[in-house]
Length: 555
Image (cartoon, rainbow, N blue to C red; front, side, top):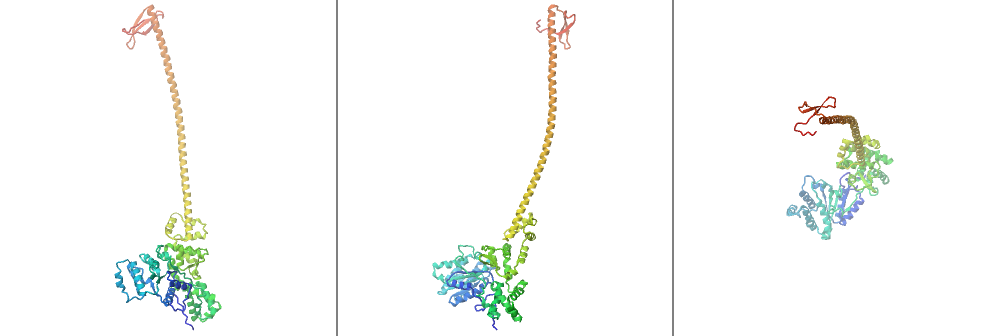
């Protein structure tokens, strides 16, 4: 029996029979032979490290001097910039086997007067290019995403790579030097300076899953006829979508099952689709967290939940994809993170779930549970969705809305979350406006009532004033009339008195001339008076006032 072995996880050796050469192998090999800067930035467990090992071996077979630096070996926690750059130089020194040729300790001390990036640059130019004067030098850098955990920026490191390629126009020796970077990151994650970044002058190598024609050799381990093996392998790819780790794992599970179960092969041949599905569900999907060994599905979950400010948005986008919504790829940060998790793939300009296994494990129920655990308003939100967005009583208002907005601040949420919060805000605004209008109406009504009361009071007061005025006017007119009548009567009386006095005086005067007979009298006031008896008055006595003695009386 053929001892065909599958390797689940880890880098495959150069001679591993289960290694599948893909289009990326050919692209990377040709690009590095031409001295191009290449980068393979993809999700985990897609075969990047195996591709590195294989390509490095092929280039070494053609007399290229190669080394690979694993950035996780240098470390990223509790490390200083000096230690990090010295670690990179040390890996190059060790990888190119310069021990005994160059004293790293002495060389590093000699360069202590210059900056760290200049030391690395000097090591490449003065050591590597000098010790290997004819050969092509290719430096592979794996697990580059580990630098994202550093406490300091290493933009100068990537700027140096760009410098080495730009320097070719000045120093032809740099044409013999090439770099290839591998990791789970995006170029903008690694360096954001577009002027100094090397990624805009490099070649991106896209790593796809296994295709049927290029991966047919994996079916050799089934120990079946070729046609039968291919039929079974098609069913495996139907579940894995060509994902290398899962494909290797199911192939391995199938061979193990055939060894432990004598009836398995006959059942497999009779109904390959059912048997493969049963194998996948029982060993990968059912209670997947406990059966995920080596870890794969948990790695995807960890990537989805790694950034709390993005988690809701990532899950929201993925939820739309599961619901059949056509999500157009836009290279946004959220979509890029979703692709780097390995859960989805960009195809024909749209995002799609990478395979059926992921769709079964990370299904809508799982998404809803995760989203509900994140949202502080999950119950109201779910009820609103269940009502087809019609039940306004489920919308947030007042303090609850303010708390939800504070929670959402700085996060990237799903479209439904944004719609729910926006609808809640609009409804809350409308209700506040209605309440304000009602309060204003009450204020206006109260003001009108007060004004009516004041108006009534003023009307009554005006009536009272009018009555008082009329009464006063009547009294005034009466008094005025009386006042006018009194002087007239008094005037008439005085006039009568004066006339009487005048006539009396005239009579006296006449009497004095005719028959002076006077009788002196004294008034009550002591004024001397003359009593004149008029002969013509029939003997009657008429009193009158006589002027004093010193008064010039002229008869």
